[in-house]
Image (cartoon, rainbow, N blue to C red; front, side, top):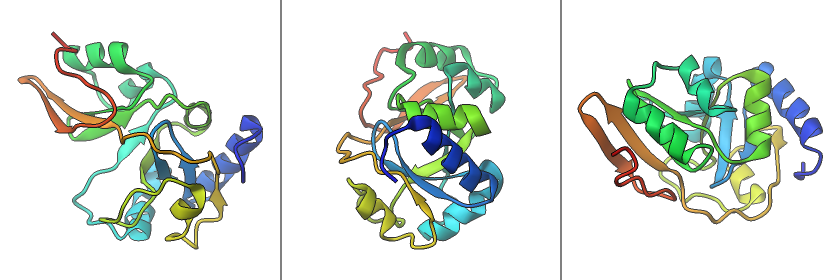
Length: 179
């Protein structure tokens, strides 16, 4: 399904997610494989991903992170400075991101936080097109085509009471962002 009428796409994707299925969708960085949080096992099964590797939760608005944890002051500063955008913030073991993508924001607004990970088999390269993203997942019935995506992945930062550490450098530079 090509990216066109966002409202129709959101309705279709929300129906798939609510039915307990996964969808492939574009984000502001890469294609994601997404499911509702109660269906996390499905994401791990589809990706053939070890259960000890976490996934992020995508939210519609920056303040929606508060549904998942009580943000520390450094987290609030990062949210204010970098969201929506390509920054995944890990706090209390929970990774959250507010992507700068209208489809993802509208979908998360409709269904709540969405569990997501890159749309590839674990350990494989990140796909750049919807067809590449869909290929490893024949059971996924809805694939939203957002064109060719070549942005770097999100930066992943862990925030604790003692400070922050960069777990993966990606699209956003955060050095000094929480000073």
